[in-house]
Length: 453
Image (tube, rainbow, N blue to C red):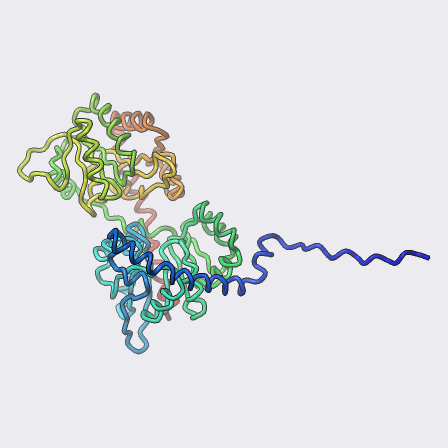
């Protein structure tokens, strides 16, 4: 007798791990929503008590729980909700919303932010918005309440920092989301690839995704965005940049009591540890350039006291911007900028600039375009993941230099200051570069208007 035939082995799955993970997204999203509800009940008392005890996030506390302004639209009126995370995103949103308000004054505009700096900037740069508030925490009850009170026709993100709870809720309500100034860091990409069941259906719900570069478009399409809705539009931050005219530059020097013919190095958006490196480089540079002044602008104003104490402890002469005597005579010295909203214009008096959060790991980088817009070549450290595209373009133009360490920072500045005729050429090159990059805001406004029709 022949032995009984063995049953054939079960067919092997040919699906990738990502496809397997995305096999039942609706069930996973239901679990996500349930966890979001549970998190809300845990977060609300803890967040509230922490805010009241420390003072952090106290402004707009009720907004974080969804109690945002209740909007009253006229019949048939459209409303766009624009979320701009912080100062940089508000700067990028402002030119778009100015054009939108001028072209379509009947469209209501509400703006949400996450940080205090963003909130202040929104009031300063987008005063025409119908409402400005803090974005609710991304928990289902808070998001649900906020959407009930605002009832937007379009939700716009000014970066690709996705809020899953918000996007799921928008999808269920059939409210289209949109993004502009899109970019995805390697860290974000790695995280999104771990949860394809969540990311892919959310990306498919976007009406338009405006990325800054070809690399960004390729990345977001790999994550699941439909190619038909992805566009390369550039960065509206170029449209937001305002070139300071020469008479105003002279007035800024007068206000800071810096000689009109003196050299100036502006170190902007510095983080802990970077001020010490800049000071050491500056003191060495003064041996060759006796007329060199240094303006230091820490990213967070609450660090001013810490920096001032360091100066005093090491017998380094300096003056706080807020304590400058208007009757004092101009002199060469160190100015510690302890005021809000001045840095962008102060860059205009610089011969050379350094932009922080880049010299010390983990870094990430800050806005290099503000000094370049004023015709000022810029240095930054080796840790600049968040600004790779901009840094690469500026480096190709000879407008940005990577200072790998304190010695490179010193030697690079010494070389640039030693060739003033080269600085003049770089100024003209920088202004031409900025002008060539403008125009994204107009194109993005057209997409917004088309979606709202």
